[in-house]
Length: 361
Image 1: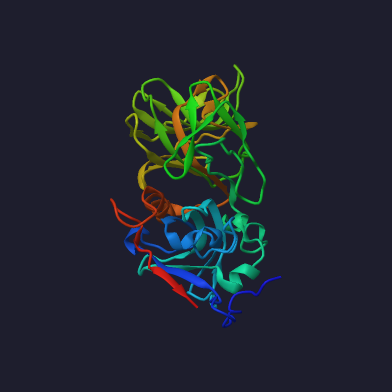
Image 2: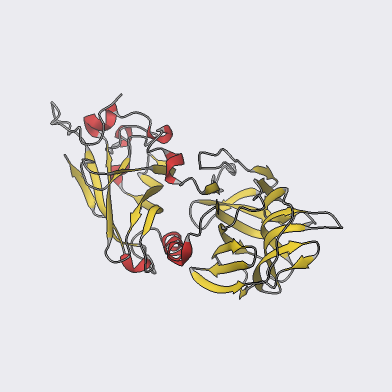
């Protein structure tokens, strides 16, 4: 077992005890008007220093499993859980989530720590029971499907500790909003866990890139369906309108709607806080709330890219997350959109003001 946070020392020979990269500085103006606790911050960075040692960089393991995220450069303060969605040891590419408190009144900062004699002694962080991948996602997340794998095979595994993996039915890997995504061709779908009736409040967030907004299509559904009594919830697009709908025995709520265009990325969050309150958010903005009482009696199956009556999705879907038993609120939703919209520095509306630089310790 390797040394824990704060156990740094001067190494013998020419090797430092560890390296750090940072500070990564989050722009507080992208974080709404309230703090978010244990928020899964996504970031992407490419730097030669983040190559593995075998490739001329300073990360010890070719898996990147010695990379920690911490509140300070030497990890003597708070350590944060990390999930690496991409690590390329040859080119120094890192895409990852780190769960931490994010403040709205001032910028939040964190550092990466890796390599050196300390990094070489670290255990596998990906499966760590406190700081591993699953701990990035709080217990309210029912499942988190990154739908990555591009340009190889589509990955439909769940990133939470619940092991509620998806089951792929013909979807293929594609370029996503972040990392890879899942391409749906109008007859493919991914089967996922359903949402139990009575789980309110619940929220579904996903990034969608529709290629057809005219015909009716479904990006997400949790439903029981037969010709006599369909029951459940679904996110749909029809005639250029995006909707979040509840249904019970052929009775439908009057859903809030948003205008959408083909071949454009949207971050969609649909939230039900009670049986008579359903809200739709698009790109961090509340579109509307429907207060019609509508309570599905029974839900049996969950789907990404399909509804069980034969309606499907055309386009790409990415980063699909379902939470139950919590109202995350508008500030979380705004932060989520701003983070995934540009998870780096530079470009249009970046989530970070700077990434800092490497230092040895």
